[in-house]
Length: 198
View 1 (cartoon, rainbow, N blue to C red):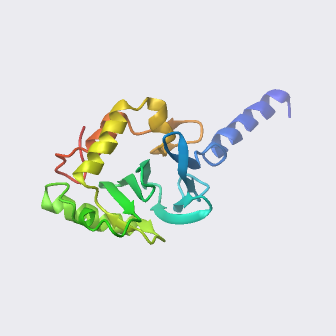
View 2: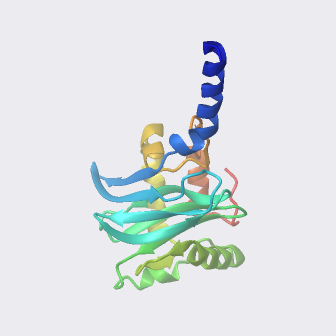
């Protein structure tokens, strides 16, 4: 076999394996230039069902179920280190929820966001289906939490957002991330539907 064909075959194999070899597997959840937690993808192929595990130090604090059509998009750790917001693509809904390890904050469990009763109940019930292996409370965010994250997103650079996100399309050599406008629409305080539009 001559060098030309060897190079062509090697390139094709590399492209086919790129979703495994070059996949984004880790997202650092940073606050004030400090890493407070790390999200790690456990599945190898991009099309395989898997789990994203979130660790604080070496301790796993929660996991998120994933598949070819469902996965976390964006993470935001709050300053207390006890609450983590997740923007999650659940195929037919975009879920925004908080995994809360501060059991004393009982008022936050009764969030009235979004204002639409059907969307609120659907998002709350689906969020509990995608989070696993946690001692935290899985709940919808409060208006104050949404405002904090929206302010961060508004001021964040595209690089900062990418660093806190998993791509919604990860082909190894091509990563597509949710745009800032979409993330802001997901967290809009006036959101009415389980699938928001920017």
